[in-house]
Structure formats: structure tokens, C-alpha cells
Amino acid sequence: MQQPIGKYRWVVVTLLFFATTINYIDRQVIGLLKDNLARDFHWSEKDYSNIVMAFSSAYAISLLGFGRLIDRIGTKLGYTISIIIWSVASMLHALATGTFSFGVARTALGLGEGGNFPAAIKAVAEWFPKKERALATGIFNSGTNIAAVVGPPIIAWIFSSYGWKEAFIWTGALGFIWLIFWWWLYEIPVKQKRLSSAEFEYIHSDTPDVEQQPNAKAGWKRLLRVRQTWAFIFGKFLTDPVWWFYLFWIPSYFNTTYHLNLKSSAIHVSTVYVLASFGSILGGYLSGWLIKRGMPVYKARKTAMLLFAICVVPVFFVRYTTSIWPAVWLISLAASAHQAWSATIFTTASDMFPKRAVSSVVGIGGMAGSIGGILFPLFIGILLDHFKLLGELNTGYNIIFLICSSAYLIAWFVMHLLAPKMKFVEL
Image (tube, rainbow, N blue to C red; front, side, top):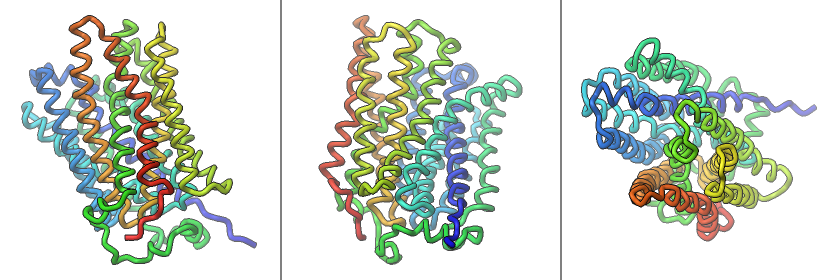
């Protein structure tokens, strides 16, 4: 009688989900309390912009650095270092006495938070066969949206009851609570005593023999010589900025276009994030389902990503909507498709590279996405300011939605040219 396959790998995904949720709750406190903080610290819009840029730049550098570090020291210790840094940095915001010290705390937060995705993707590669990796990634990646739904009421309650300093302290403390469970429950499969032999064999059922060569080098120079790395880089660079646009401009777009305020538009913004969570999970499931039905791994990933890219295209028609809810459904479809794309593109890194190089590749691609996330808002700001002066703000948004609607198809085409069959890289 065949021994039943265990489910401990889903405990690992649960840990990754809560870490990602905490990561995004910690980073969104400043945005939710912006008006109050600006009044207390006498910030101008430029001051606030500089603080955001400091975080974004530190986060981009951290993705690259943590990606390499985690491949060297391992997932368990690397994730631990990351969450300690970002949790301490989050709590240090409460000690800020001015704009400069607040900016220093924000920079430290960016340096710590960059370790989340390289560590999480590496953990998925360690704990899941290829046919389940996209689903596992989609589940933990949905934490980015759940944070946007549960974070605002939690932070608002702490702020109204105790003040803004406590909001940073309490949310920062969540990381240390998570760390207890991480050290208690996580080990790589070969060291995990709670793991059954049947589940261990299942996890490694499609592991290439090259994975057993622990001394092969996987430095940045070596990785940047292969086309598969550049496929991942361009895939992230062209699409990550679109997600940041949804995060930072959609509330304002709803308010200015449909004459709403922050309170009345809350239900519409929440709808986008809730549906995006389902997109992350269902999108991650699709390529795994195709693999189980016999489709080659690379073809399953590319078929799924092409479908997600097509699902983004209708966001272009937001410009023709005359009421709020049709716009919400179109943007929700695009945001859901992005999260499905994100879950799948992260998984391509573990498809194409040995486990010991996955964090480095994710870090490189993540940094490229963050650079795009810095440049695109600059372009958006210039564009919207220009058309605002002309009294044609909607024209500016129309151009932006055109870019957003086509970015994923362009990214898919570039990735296909660079890595048509996503061949495994033997380092």
C-alpha cells in the first residue's frame, strides 16, 4: 500500500504568507498616516517624496544584496536577518524627532524588507516540486493584497486609540512574533524531522541531478552571462511598475475622476485588492494544473503568462467608463492578472536555475523591477502635471492605462525571445 503524501510543505507556505503580509503592513503605515505625520513633522510634499524615494532605493539595493546573501547562508538564517532588520526599523520610526531621522528609519526598513521575496521564493523551491511551485507562490504572494485589506483598519484603530508612534511599534512587533514560529517550524527538507519520507520523495520528484553539485559557483557575474537571467530581469522591469501604479495612484484616480473622497472610495479600492488576492492564488494554480495534465513545464508557464497578459489588456477601456463600478471591475481584472503573472514569473526563476542560485536571480530581477518602480512614477508625475496644467488630466491617465495594458504582452514577447524553452541553467 502506497504511503500517503504528507502536507508539511503547506505549513511552510503558511509561514511565508504571514511574513509577506507583515512585510506589506509595515511598509504601508506611513502612507495611511501621511497627513498626520506631515502635520507633526511639518513635511512638504517634497519631504515626503524624498522619504519614499529613500525607502524605494534602499529596497532595490536590498533585493540584490539579500538575494546573494540568502544563497550563501541559507533560507532560515537569511529570512531571520531580514525580518529582524525590518521589524526593528519599523519600531525605530517611533523614535524619530525630525524628517532626517524619520528618513533614516525608512531607509533601514527598505534595507530589511528586501529579503522577503528572495527568501520566500527560495523556500518554495526547496519545499515544492515544480508542478506546485506557482500555486505555493500565489498563496504567499496573496499576502501583499491581504495586507492592503486588513492593514488599514488595524492601523487606524491603533492610531486612534494610542497614537502614531504605537502604530509603528505594534506593527513592527508582529515580525518578532512570526520569528518564533519560523525558528520552531522551518528547516530545509533534509533536516526537517516532521517531514515524512513519502513527502520528501514527492518534493524532490523532479529535482535535476545538477542540483546535487553544491560547489558550482552562482555569482552575479556568472548569472548575468545567461539569457535566462535577462528574461527574468526584463519580465520584472516591464511589469512591476504597473503594480506600483495601481497601489499608489488608483485611489487618487477614483477620487478625481468620479468625484469621491477617501472614505467613499474605500469599498472600491478594497474590492480591487480582494479580487487581486484570488488572482494570485488561481493564477498560481493554473500552470500547475497544466503541468499535471501533461504539458511541459516551460509551455505551461508561458501559456499561463500569455493568458494573464491578455487579461490585462481590457484595462485600456477604463478611459471609456462613465461610472465607478465598471472601472473597478476592469482595474480589478488587471490587478488580479498582475498577481497571477507575478506568482508565475517568480516560479520561472526556480524552473530555470538551481536552488542555490534562486535567491540571487530573484534579487537581481527584483532590483530591476524596483528600478522600474522608481522610474515609472517619475514619468507618471511629469505626465499628469503636464496634462493637469492643460486641464486635460484624464488624457494623462489614458496614456498611462495604454502603457499598463500593453506592458505584459511586451514582457511576454521579450521573455520568449530570450528563453524560448526556459532551459535549465547548469552552473
